[in-house]
Length: 208
Image (tube, rainbow, N blue to C red):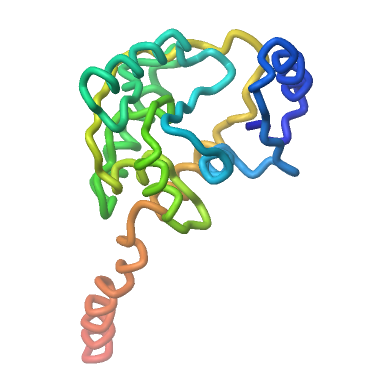
């Protein structure tokens, strides 16, 4: 999946295709964001097994072999990388862990802690995930909602081996807000919870 990148990704994929003719690429007309590009990929491909992996090699490709082994021997529908640590400033690392624990507390369904999109899953899982309709798909939450047998393989996420990420603090904040809103109806229900208190306060002030 080429999310309208401007770093020569498409040309590199075409070079790979010369040696591996079965390789193909889906090119987005514009940058639709990470989660939407993943959802678009799932809706556009077919197969028995699927693997998500970023091209920056922050997630080790050699783990895909472990994913397949666990799937074949253990019968797991989902095998995923569990990010126990990341090579980034400790403050950001702790903020990520705190966010996902807050998300789990508010979410309507299960949120799998420290789960990465770096994962293998079956076509049955794919079919269940793509039936969900959302203006902001959140793959981790979707996988938690659909169930199925899961197995986690812990690993430390590495730094990018090339290029630079456009994912900055503002992007993180937007992602966090969207993830909360797409995973929980709490904030839609909050005004209903607050309304009786507002009425009581209004009457108390009016009575005085």
